[in-house]
Length: 160
Length: 160
Image 1 (tube, rainbow over the protein chains, first blue to last red):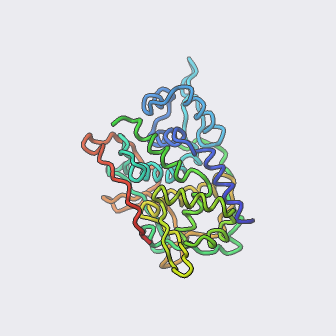
Image 2 (image 1 turned 60 degrees about the horizontal axis):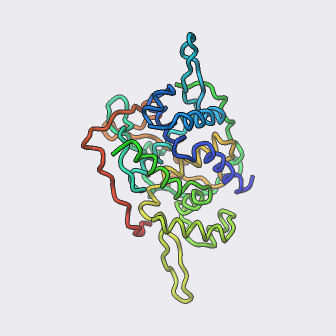
Image 3 (image 1 turned 90 degrees about the vertical axis):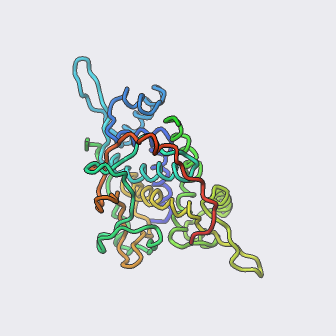
């Protein structure tokens, strides 16, 4: 591989979640919202925009459309494993936007479910079993054997 | 405030780091790269694009341009506090790109400096003193008094 692979993967990621509505839709889904009308009410998003963004999130494997009622047929939207794996990106983006892009805190907070405390984000070392901040980050060349073992895109199975 | 504030703050964030080169420049800076030629070599980025992106990152308060030599005058680029605060976004974006956007691992890894173990990202509960994953996230309405206490944009002082 060459160093050029990473920029292209980032381009693909930005095409999936590089706009504000896609970010906010996935964040709302992470809070448990699943139905079209509930996304509309929660986000104040225009219905045609929501339709288009949900379609794109489904086609990119981030969400899956699942029937929840048969007469009449109704669908809801759930995050796939790949969608749930976006949570660190979304939480970090919204948090930085609130703190550094002249924003105000969102009217809803994401909390640790068992105790209701607002969550924080940390880097974690599996070996030392400790959290740490950006000051303790260092960059290293990867060993040749570690490069190229990319994972496949998940198959879009529901994961809620 | 209204729910509309958050989308606008996210738009501002995406204007700052919503393109692949800005993301990779800030990530390289997080690995300790500071000089124009070193960014060029590390990222394989064209010099005019690097010039333009560095200028924008400086004007947005994410990086600061600092002289490191007087004869002849030479500058280097350092992350500000706001730039360092982007690290959870960047780490999460690059990781998701590698794993879910059909990418391959970057040739450099970010590790926990004291032990050299590749870092992981986790949500952290200050009260329970535990890390947790997306399954333990819940959304709650913020109390009225908590909303509207946004922080100011940092003044761009060096933080390395």
